[in-house]
Image (cartoon, rainbow, N blue to C red; front, side):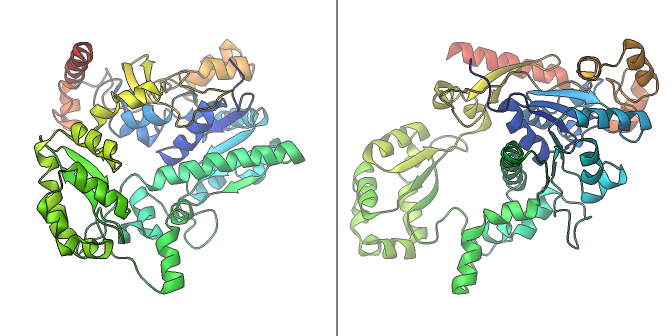
Length: 448
């Protein structure tokens, strides 16, 4: 196999939550050696989202395991002098440092770009605070909903006469893509000049740049786009239509007169298609509500996949609305190798999305699952930095490193009474339910 595109690039990653870790995961899948810095004093918050109240519950977060594949885990207390010293030694032997804290955090840790470039003049530092490292909001705490609101997307999302609607998943991935690209540009710049640099990436600006069309419509034409739900600003029909079954849907979009004729032919040319109110694009858009009801009478009696096959053969853009359970078994994605099997030492084997780009000469894939907490302490500290076994023992005693979180309320030493005081009975039977669902999934896969 050819060398991976980012082979021989080492990244020290102190990102948490979603945007930063996903940006770095893209780079890891492209071949970079990523050392994710975690802490037994305070877990990556993503480990706590979707995890379970059980002794190893912090390893069961779907969100964490999604955006941290192909990474190593080193636990390190950056507030401890020895932890900070090890971090600096690692920076000296690395190419990139990434973080997505608010701008004050790395400064407070005395690990700002100015400090790190004194250790390694060629270091590239990606900072991804929600609002950037400058400006009046630089120290404000940011979460996806705040960022979406500031970027204006909810104002054009949702339904007419309804409130602004959060997407919930836009802000982080957009910032992630911008972050991954920025690091690769900085690496190319360093290759040419020998100089590292600081990358200041604002989530708000990243998502706003993807919102350019409605912004420019206001700047150029003084028009504020309304909320339209699933509809387009000028073409009809366009929307999501109910199919046979419970919560089954198909998306249909017609963007030309030819496609309208194709749609009419596909559904059998019912008499209403010849009515004057649907005679051209302007008329159809003006009567979108009535058109939607008439169209939906056709797919609601059919399986969504059958509907898509009929429409696609007729030359109409259509696609089934897939659930997560359908996505991981989709034959198209399977054939392209996008869905891959991953085996995790705690959670077992599961299917996960791969890299969305295919390279003819440097194919990339998931090489290893998301790491367990502190899984690679020995590798990083002894193999890369040359520490001795005795030094590792001392670091563990001082709680600078470790493989179990401190204060985890569901650890074995916490008795059942205390667990119930902390979390009630919500954690009972979680593992059994997961195992039962896995058996069902395996039976369905075998039967299909």
